[in-house]
Length: 99
Length: 304
Image 1 (cartoon, each protein chain N blue to C red):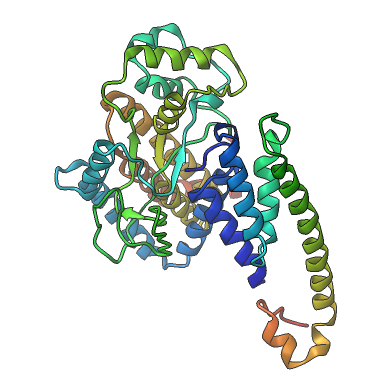
Image 2: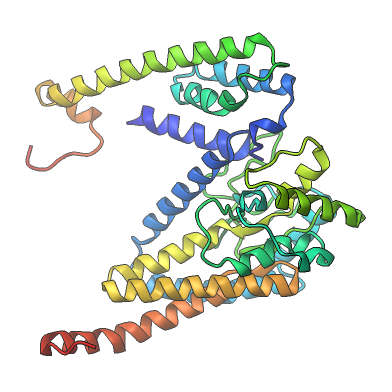
């Protein structure tokens, strides 16, 4: 089920990393973080293809970018939500009473 | 919000049903059980208690009787050497810091995890327990094919894997799943044990068979069990602080007793009845006897 990364051989690690990387493009930056978390302990294994490190690095960069985007959106949303009228209400999940 | 939810769910799915770090899988299982327990507390109070009582009965039937669905499930999964794909929370004895005594050497590997459990009742978090989910909310009948079980609330069924969040049909199995191949040599068990003895850090053995059997041979505790324990304790918490503590103790005692029995009987046991019976007993006793007693003591300032 959830095998520890150490038990996978080099090919499988490459496949997993690649799948996680490409799946992250479906608006899923979490999978990029997941990629990094998962492959991190074995990133220095010698028999690993260099592709894996590239995937890791790209995943890292993309996840940071997405994180920044998310943060910006979030701050904008929280601060200007009230000024947007109906749209703001439609986008809000939890309506805070008293505001 | 939906973005965050989407990410969270997909990461959870990947971590539990596909490859991923073990600790992340456990985190997700814990979070999911807590969320489930939280949502179940929305029921009315007596409904919850009746539900728990009926669950106890159902659990006993489903697991112990010869025609119980869970028994068949466990048997079929054992016969086909296939792991039950449900929400399993695996005990990996490798994470233990202490090493087992020599006396259990002759009992083979099956009992390895169980005696450890008895010896260290106060173990810390790294002791990961494997749990097959159980829930009563299955709307469908259990389909006992290849280890599939019941329909599920969020039935995410992949074509390739049995990725169903399969809340098994009722009873929770505390199945100490023995190694899949019945003809495993005894030396295998000894090998694994020595590995545990040799290192404190989780030693990764390159041999596939050992790791496979180690993963499967862990103590498997039903995740649904934890959900219902949590529901019981949440109900207790809504009443008073004292009931919470008492019920927690009761449930934990029940769980220890069940693990103990598991070591004796060596087959799938229902984990719910003992704990829930203790829990409910303690809850009602505490609520109707202890709390007024303590209130009177408090108001009269008598300290025991």
